Length: 122
Image (cartoon, rainbow, N blue to C red):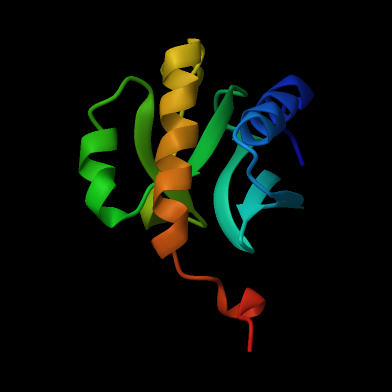
């Protein structure tokens, strides 16, 4: 599992600064940050370019808006596009304002996101 430790700490710091309870979990080839037991945002390394990238759960309604931002593209996992999820390459998150945009988008969508059946609370 490949991901940048500095970026992982940067995400953790962003959540702590907002007083957001989160857990992190290694999966999807990287590190995911879970809020309310739901995937919120994560990071991994692109196997083709070897660049670090964010994996952001923004929801289907915000996805079109997000796709207009630098470095953003549809997230594909196992060869299929994932609705409501985007990859963001470094040119889209290197600047602090851009980084904060992606963290906010992920947190904004999280309250209405559905839990994976695996994490369903009964």
